[in-house]
Image 1: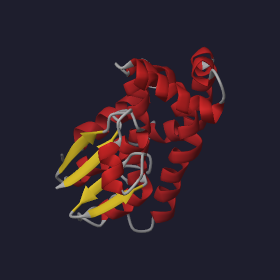
Image 2 (image 1 turned 135 degrees about the vertical axis):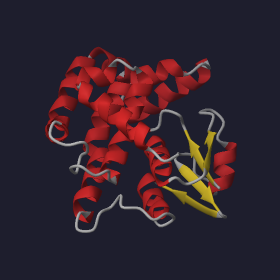
Image 3 (image 1 turned 90 degrees about the vertical axis):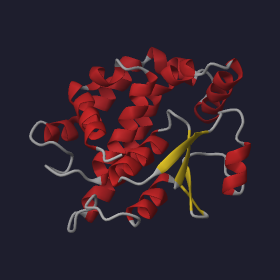
Image 4 (image 1 turned 45 degrees about the horizontal axis):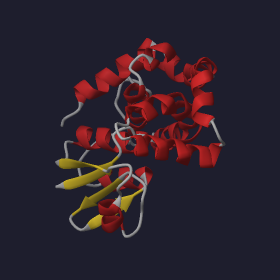
Length: 214
């Protein structure tokens, strides 16, 4: 049994969960309280960030390393022969350029999901330490501009999806799984946000959920 330590909104944890589902691997989820990470720290030997997995005594952190580990545990075709460069490059793109825009779109809504004022304040504080005072409020104010930026970044993906079921054509790959994690983060923040970028993204996310083995 695999244990996945996550925040429920984390795009990196969500993409790992999508991969677990599509590989059909048995797992359980441990939602880490945002303000109490003692168990996560104990399991990982000091790490305070998610995702992390525990499997048969092995602890793996960083979503890309977790992907590489999980892909060895089950027979699958999520990295088709001859397409390794393309699917891993797309995965890395979702985790960098795309994530940088989508997390800004999602952050104001994520902040509102916290039920404890201290956790909401800590979430905002961490963002402000990195991106400047008032950044979350600024992202809320400039949401339309951020959505327009996401449309530009996702335009090639959307063009592909207008002609095929998945990012790499008519077969599911880790490129789709990674994209789904980022889209699920946006959906968690506010279900109206994905359709604002493109209804095709909501259709892709639904198709991935419905096709999972788990």
